[in-house]
Image (cartoon, rainbow, N blue to C red):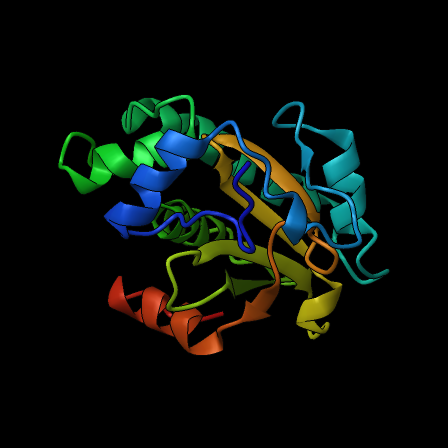
Length: 199
């Protein structure tokens, strides 16, 4: 049996993607750490996600929590249709890398979600660009939401890549598959690249 120390990449490394396609039946059990895997949102009005976002701080506006949950959920579903997403993320990565699909790499999911959430002009919630295993074949990117001024490590991750357009969410700390760090420069760069003023 083959074991992997890190989860597979959502980026452009063709070798890693091909390996994923060939080895998809193996579980990266060596990588297991404390914590529960992210939860799949059940709908655009998922009450558990809305409640968790609102519970980040007493200062969080429940309507902002509702709009973030709705936007994160619908973004994944819309992009899955637009990009004609394959059932497995590694397969989609391969199709993107050979030019058979126009989107579906993890940073593309995160980038599109960032832009759509930024349009909401949030006042009580704050967006963060998160990365795990940066600049490696195992790199993965997501958006993390915190209360305004709250530490990144207290945030909730929003991941549309992991389950091919189905929104996964959970605490940024304790993810059993990834170790998340904040990249503020990347957040700023992506917002400025589209001519959008940072929050």
